[in-house]
Image (cartoon, rainbow, N blue to C red; front, side):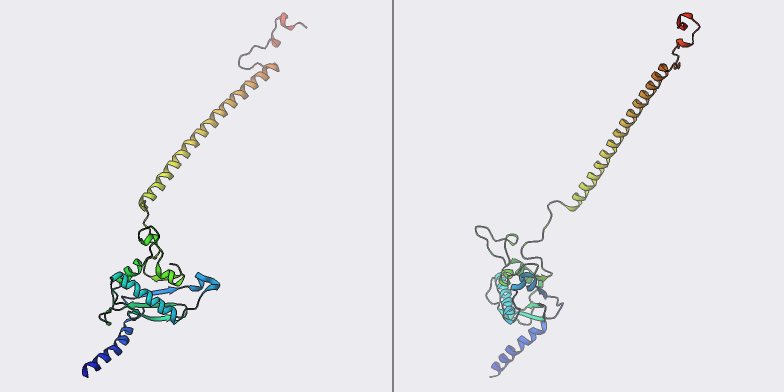
Length: 234
């Protein structure tokens, strides 16, 4: 009889004790933010207890799949601090010990690993859609696990290191400056040569006009002013 009473007390008290383990900013908890209206517009559905049950069931499935065990169920997904704008915190408790929380790192791995298999392709986080998103007709932008990278793809690591990109930009700017300087010098040289040619042409034209007007320029002998009768006869 005493054993039955103890078991009954345990069954009644365990869920209440587990609920106290879920608190905002809990060390092993995650916050979820859902934007149904943004994702679906006029076709948005109402978030209610049924949708929350689906979330808990999906998370229980993720934990089963990650740990390869069938002991997880919706009672192991504890939700708290739910708001009307559909955000809440959740923690995962151990099936063997309802007072023990599953480490945050394991929950993150379970969420990130929950992917669907594409036809004729191996299972891959970067090539699959997350089943949690599919269950609610949402995307990574409208169903957010704050603190967990998007489920559609792994964090993108650029093939080219950032420092190499910066180095290339700097070198490109230096070469562009050198080319601009060379072109500017060449254009100035051509303008100078063209100016000298124009000055020489102007000087030649001026001398020719002086000869035509009877002006002696640069040692040219003007026969109009000689005393020789051969050149002064009319």
